[in-house]
Amino acid sequence: MSGDEALVVRDFCAWLAIEGWQVETEVEHVDVVATRDGQRLYAEAKGKTTDPGLDVDTAFGQLLRRMPKQDDASFRYGLVVRDEPRSVRAVQRVPSRVLTLLRITLYAVAEDGAVRELTGHDQ
Image 1: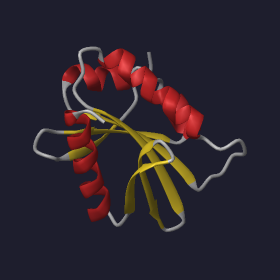
Image 2: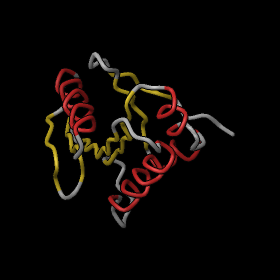
Image 3: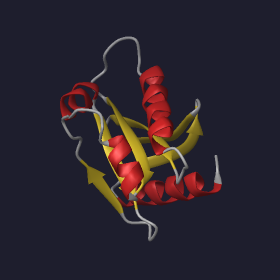
Image 4: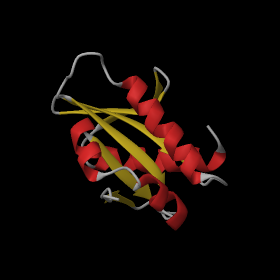
C-alpha cells in the first residue's frame, strides 16, 4: 500500500471506528474489512494517483471479485478515494443505479482526515 493510500485507509478506519464499526485492515487482500450489527463492509481504498480513472476502475474490479457467489444482504462494499476533484470525478462515473444494486457506497477522505459519503452520478 503506497504512502497516501495508507493515510486514506488510516483516516477511513478511524472514522469507521467512531461510527461503531469493528475494523481490520489487509484481510484476504481487502484494504478494509469492518463489521457492525451483523453487517460486513469490504472497502478498497485509493490514494492520490497520476491516473485516478484507471486506479478507480481497478478498485471497482477488486470489489467485484470480493463479492460472494451467493447474494448476501449482510455484505456491503465501499470505494474510498482521496477527496480531491480528479479522484472524486473518477469514482462517480458509475451510475447510482449500479452502485445501489451492488450495495457499493462511495467515500472521500480529505487531507485533514474528514470522511464524507459521495453519491454516484448518472451519465
